[in-house]
Amino acid sequence: MTDCVPPLAINPALALDVRCAPCIHAAFEDMQDSRLFAIAAVDERGELIAIDCAAVHPTLIEVIQTRPRVVRGNHRHRRCSEVLTVTHGALDIYLLCDCPGRHLFRKRMEAGASVHLPPGTAHAIHTLAETAITSIFMNGDPRLDRERVEMISL
Image (cartoon, rainbow, N blue to C red; front, top):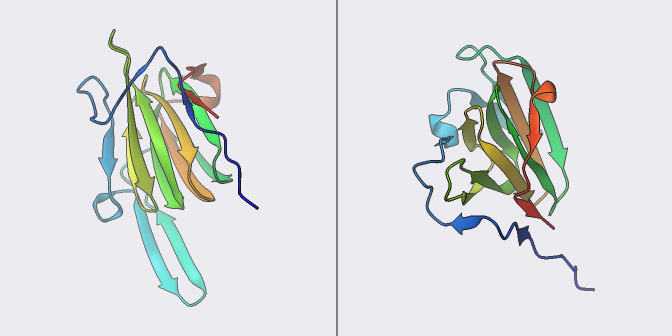
C-alpha cells in the first residue's frame, strides 16, 4: 500500500528562497560546533544526550517528540530567544523575515544541528521522520510570548 502524504503548502503571500536572505537573523550550528549540544556517551545500549546550559541562562527547556510529516510552529516569539536542536531525526525549518520582501527560507536540519532564533524570528518546522527536538528559551516564558504566523501547512 502506498503511503499517501499530502504536499506541503507554502503561504502564497510569501517568497520561498533557497538562500538565506540577509534580513533573516538566525545562526545555524552543526553538532561539532555547538556550545550547547553534546553526545556524552554512545554504546550498544544507545546514546546519552547532554545539553550544556552553562553558556546560557534558560527560562524554559522543551523536549518535543514528533511524528513524521507533521508541521509545528508557525509562530514567533517577540521577546524570547530560542535555541532549537534536533536530537534525533530530521526536519526542514522555515524562517520568515519581517522585511517587505517577506522572504521565507528553508533549511534541512538533521540530528545534532542547532539554530539560534533571536526574538521576532518567525519559524515553522516540517518533520521528515520521527524526530526529537530540544528548544531552550532565554529572556522570558515562550508560552506567554507566541504570535501565530501562517507560513506552511499540510
